[in-house]
Image (cartoon, rainbow, N blue to C red; front, side, top):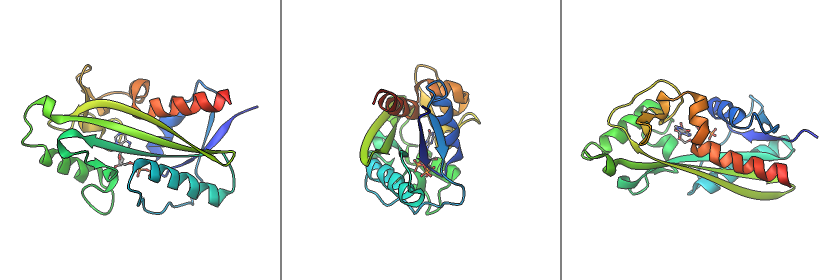
Length: 196
Ligand code: ITT
């Protein structure tokens, strides 16, 4: 039997990454119908937002399993900001360029790499057989001094992997998917779905 789940996101880059992450598992990722728009995220945590997206899509399509995911960039020197506010960090309408500019400005006094520690956290909420199950993935890095690279999306041009000396945006999608926050979380989801 082919296993699949609906994915509650409007972010086409996430869909592409998740399809690539899961391509060898046999799990099919079904993007949310394109005419659906999701309400603004108002949760206080990544978990609340991930569950909110999954429940919203499940109610609309009346089908399961459904996965919602929320990702945040957590910067140590900024006491965890932008965190759950990552999409609307700089303005009420999400804007990657403005978000990066604000982040770099707020860190401009941090001249040493160890002062620029950050991590990406992805939380996935899977609704299956009316149960809600949470999976998490995290990756540590630091915020580069200037944006580098043209691949990826969001904060990728300023998220540097220390031992590679490259930002996520300087990696191909396949390279990012070897160890990204999203890959860790969705491989846990795949293990769970394939073993149940
Ligand atoms: P959905 O809510 O429709 O899933 P979104 O883009 O709003 O899509 P998030 O709320 O999870 O997704 O993302 C919060 C912010 O973090 C947003 O600005 C994203 O561009 C950024 N982001 C998420 N995943 C990222 C990644 O892997 N690399 C860089 N930035 C990322």
